[in-house]
Image (cartoon, rainbow, N blue to C red; front, top):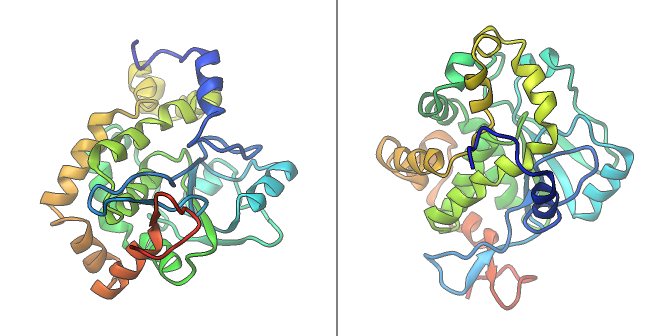
Length: 273
């Protein structure tokens, strides 16, 4: 199938009804990063109901707020810039019992459409600018491992995909599984296809180039594979990255990894065996 074509609606609904996708009314592209096996630490998997990724939460319904809390989520990390929030009129929601931290990867800058069209350049910029934002999520995981959190950008693909990959790499999840998680955004975003095309049509580059606009829907396995290679070569690996850019120590990394992983047979436990 041409990955620029719309996906079959029945296929999409079937996939969205299955893990790792999670239902939060008014929010798209929500999934749990739990249950992924660590190839570096045998018999351990990423802890379920701890880390969730999604697209923006601004459209969450009252039912969705209840669902979010029922998932054990008590902390939201919003990676969007002020410019994006204003541009799309998508303010942060108010949710009783849920803390919201606005930790923009880019402070005031908006993505240029040209940069969005060049994934390698974009992802390198996200790594260069995202240390503070990603550090906030990592420190939450270090200090509050029993409090579920959700992190998101606008679509839940690029900035969200980068921090998801960082977290999964720290847990020792293999690259193939990380790439597979990234590719799921192609399905997760499909319900908002028309809205996203509408937004893109307002950007001159995409308005005049339909293929470039449709290309924004792609979440190719190879894109994440290239990113992970860049993380290893340009940034000397995930541990070196989070130490240099997020200010974490070796002890922090050890604690975060311990909190990320649970035994396969006992997913409710946090201790590594």
